[in-house]
Length: 492
Ligand code: ADP
Image (cartoon, rainbow, N blue to C red):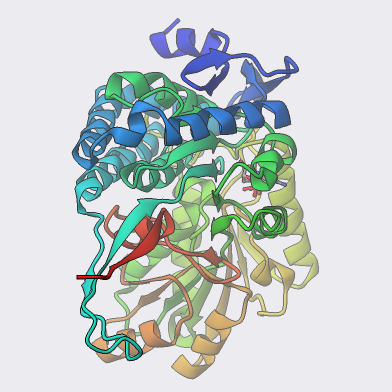
């Protein structure tokens, strides 16, 4: 048994106030290896009572603990140390992600883990740079008076962070990094499908220098632990990444005490290939845009629009790329696409394939299961779709590309914007003016040109329209984890 497998096999609790404990009602949840379709281990499944305890621990750590008096430099140092610790355990974290979600080990190591390390380092730098401004105020009704006016940026308080299963460690880093840099305390709830890497991260927190209660890890189901966080009166803010549907229910639950909210929700991102594009790189880019991480990416390039003259050529190229992909267990070194995360999720993706065909789409390739117990599904392409089809409007969150031809830039800009989402988009062209015009017309939080799936700790990420509220990463995210306080001193 490898060290990672040995670690996985041990019992796993909830991290509350620096202690690992069972759920108050003793509940546990099964953790599956999707490549084998088997339960690997069980972890404690928190509920409302555990969220209560975590909220109390986080409040105590925020108000009275050593965290409240730690300097910004100390917070930055702890974040940097956490990044170093993840790096020291990088192979272990990558293996945990691969076993838990199914993704290829290389993707886990060089995307998930590498970006998570970078995120903590980037936010370590911000800890000492979150500052206010001074203002030369005039106050017309106080002539002759002299004031000193300035702002300070304070942490929001106790933050609930609810994350999805597709990039568990990375999503934890996107959320924990800015929250901790700004001095908040956190209750982190990983997705029930993928609890492992957050538990391992929790084990490293004391060594990094985070006091007890600053980060609490409460695994559990969305409808119990997640809903309890969204509704809890002792939590000041919720940051959520997941489906638009759940985002809406979190908005409603958060209304009670008017929590601050940031929401990173679904997408149905258009990928637009003009006839003047470098076809070879557009084909490779479009395949990567949809098939990376089994298509389980909120910003996946799931809608392909190709200018008519090269439509069939691009389709054939992507179909060949899909057919050439090695689908298999993430732990095998030549695997390019792993299994889908769960049995239920594969069934959902398959139901969309059937729906697409019943709506009149042409299946160019893929959609078949692999023999055996894992939740594998061949990458697939549905061609000749129309924008009014459900497979074009709804997020499938799997390796299913829907494609259609277009004739001119005006038409494709309108088609690209014609969904409730606005998370990301891409344009492939060698015409610089066309590229700029399209970036201006597309309503999305990220627009890539001649590339796809490029993420960086410095670059804000988030959605227009029903893809969400607020931005993660970059300097932008810090505004969502701080309150601005105006201070005005008179009598001078
Ligand atoms: P997906 O469809 O990708 O599984 P979800 O939006 O269902 O995404 O889940 C994302 C996260 O939201 C998970 O951590 C899940 O447990 C949580 N969640 C699901 N339902 C709720 C809910 N009603 N309230 C709060 N959190 C929820």
